[in-house]
Length: 118
Image (cartoon, rainbow, N blue to C red; front, side, top):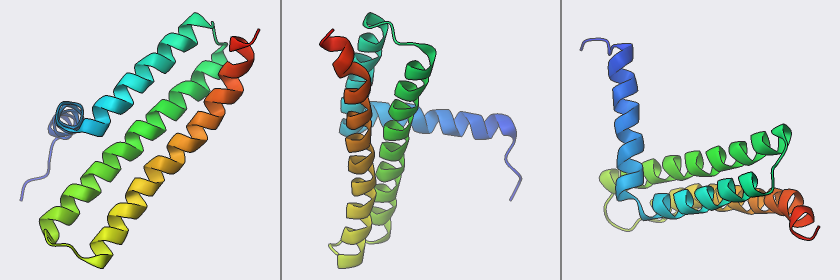
């Protein structure tokens, strides 16, 4: 097997990103929420550190959602039938996304609520 070139690796990664946003329902939801948050960030004129925190939260939620989708696809390929360990694996991966969404929501409230009420 030949070693993959850097350009091929980047191309494959970009294909994964495009596939994710094109085919995955949760990706479209997360992208819409991210765009709304970015518009709010612009509207409320966040400072540099607030922008960095918001961007990091968006990146972490979407990144975890991508990993969750990959884990689900791999689990389905390995064992298409219902299996308790596969279910636990999928639930844990989905839980990681939910956990990051909750934490990001709390961070968003800390950043945006004072700006909304001022």
